[in-house]
Length: 133
Image: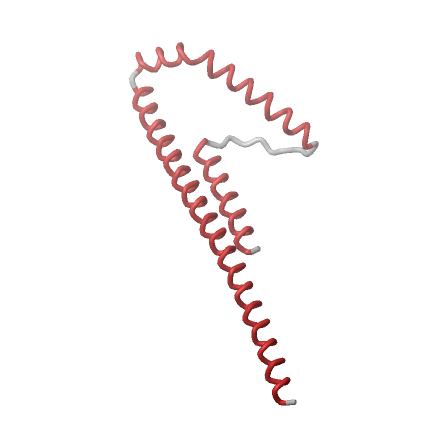
């Protein structure tokens, strides 16, 4: 009788070991997925930081160029049509988006840096949600 009890205990122990091994493999897989997501997040953050830096540099260079009255006049003449057209196009996009949502939206003046920072915050929040799952 004791012999059969030992065989049963051995079977139960093997089943437990297989369950622990399976759970360990699943945890390692999830850890690999988490590390991949973390690497992707860091890559996105670095690219956004680079974009923000580029926009800040461009803004500084544009301010320096606009300080010279002759260059300012030339820049305004050359790009005024493009800027007006882009503003109209952006206005149409915002209008169609707000109509699609059917919710009143506040219109605010945000810079590209603000929008990139907002996008970065959203991505970090989404990554935190994925990490918690």
